[in-house]
Image 1 (cartoon, rainbow, N blue to C red):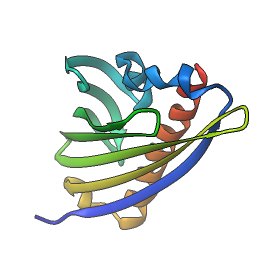
Image 2 (cartoon, one colour):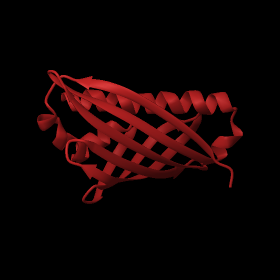
Image 3 (cartoon, rainbow, N blue to C red):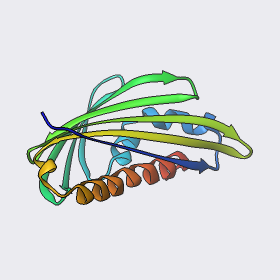
Length: 151
């Protein structure tokens, strides 16, 4: 099967303590707000969620379904999420790694996203895939910073 792999990363400074923000990274409402276009979230178990999104993915309108699992947690240091989803003839896997560093008056979140795409989306021009994927992943990063700040 043909597959396209993209990597993105970013950094956000959060003006609150990690002690205050840490529980938010495991709260279902935070997970729901983290990913763009989420319409519903179902808790499947500890650290496991099922999301339904209605979004124009890469210019292909329709419903997207994604299961998100918390894969790894190092207390106040690191969290790894994996999302596996499909919809509109496209399948994807995203691994989102969050690393936390305490700094003066807050902490910074370093995030890295590894995205794998397959299916119908690969028929689109490569620039469209990359630009749209980056826009969606950047939105996840911005949401992450806002949510950690209490947004």
